[in-house]
Image 1 (cartoon, rainbow, N blue to C red):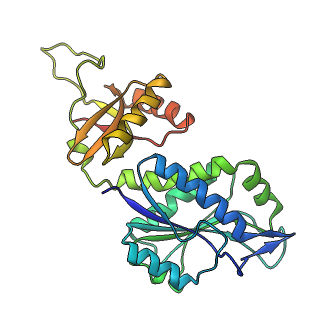
Image 2 (spheres, rainbow, N blue to C red):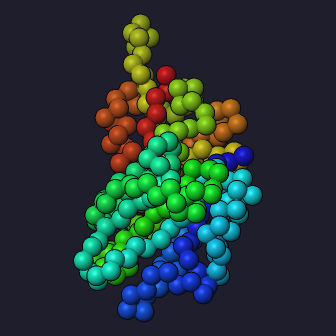
Image 3 (tube, rainbow, N blue to C red):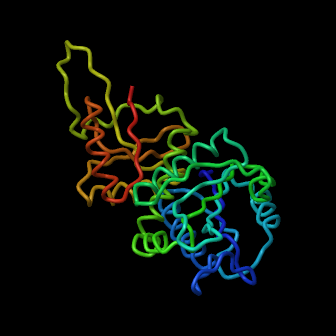
Length: 277
């Protein structure tokens, strides 16, 4: 079964959340959650939602939904607010305590959002928040800028797709660094994929590949491979245990691998450089 995550759009229905100049937090969060979810689904993640329409549920109900669904992770999207308009700006993420994979994910999300132009206000512990306290899985609450900051709202509106991708990449970065299958177990690539050949009498140097996806379903892996090939990236699929790994290239230099990884990221793919040895 694929890694599963429940995405929560903060507030909803009769609870608008923070409001500024007619702008309502519940609307921003729902749009963003649906965009993030689409990206994650396209990368093989099993995504569930606390809401996909403008309805109200208590934070406790949302936590119980996640627990009953048995998802692996819970990520809640909110917009922040401050008593004085345009006095504060930036993104911050909240977790139950500053430890474990939830803390890693919060940091990865913040780091990605910082590349969009948001000020990174860091990760903070909030043990009394219901969706962080009552969920049984690692949970992160992202405060996606201040809704009463014109600076943050401009960033939100002008970079909406990039923000959704950044949050998804932050989540995927954490998952790649905490894989279900040990990355060291990735075998050699298929020989017909033009590897960099070393003389037989010399010891071959370490090989590096770029992982772009990991799927339980072979069809999803093949679909991503064909998409990468269409973009002229030398992609292939390797079966590793229960997973179909979509990999790009075979490099003897980690610098060359990193250069190709950057090109993949610019093209909108979520990636991680792995060793094939």
